[in-house]
Structure formats: structure tokens, C-alpha cells
Image (tube, rainbow, N blue to C red; front, side, top):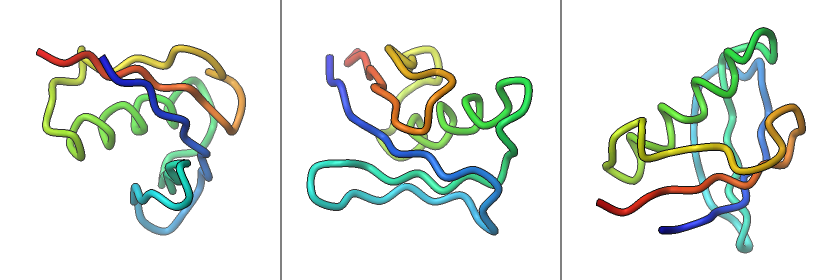
Length: 74
């Protein structure tokens, strides 16, 4: 199990995930409405780490810009 800290920037031109100085930066195309940005964040992290979407969960900060995301190892 791995926990990472992610800073989210919604409404970006393209969805990207990059790491700098111990914190991950996720730029998401989705707006922060009705959980769309959180869904896109989970898909982006699952694709980056090569795991299932069900293995990725937002541990804290679901409505904040800085989130703790938990990735379960299979």
C-alpha cells in the first residue's frame, strides 16, 4: 500500500501527472463539479501506476486541492 500527496489543478488544457519535490501535481481537464475531477484523478493515477481504478482511493481531501491518495498493491 502506498500513499501519495497530490495537488490538483482542475480545468487544465490536458490531463497530466508529474512529481516534483515529493508532491505530485495533477492537472485535470475535468471541472471540480459533481466529483468529475476526482474520478479523472483516480483514472489518471491508476493509468500512471499500472493498477486498477478500484485499487486507487482518495483517503482525505476529497473536496480540497491537496489530497492524500492511497494506492493498494495487488
